[in-house]
Image (cartoon, rainbow, N blue to C red):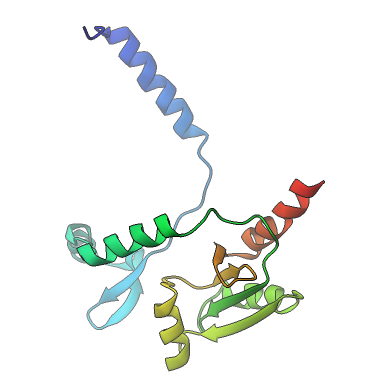
Length: 167
């Protein structure tokens, strides 16, 4: 038999949820998408185009979903070992890419960089399902992906995590 909830109990739950929401930290994500032949930040669109954007439906073919599930089931748990290599993706007009590129180029780990403005860079981005720049993908010694990072702060956190666990 289901326990009946009172209005007061529901109001308390709502108040608790609102309190949790006031403590949420983060930053606004800027979304770019194609409009009238070129890419532009959605926040700069007019009211009508924003309305059209909200009505868009994203979908993924069934075979892609099945392939992802198979890959996830077949791959072992992520190793906590230090990465053996990494690749990174940047774009010429990206405001955040220079800082990431400068930081990763100083790392003493085997790496390759790709600029998605080039045909080779765009092809590699497709191969690794990279949808944003900058993106840094770290691999273990066997070439399996360990993790991804999108900023200098995230890269530092990922690289320092194994050291902190070893102490």
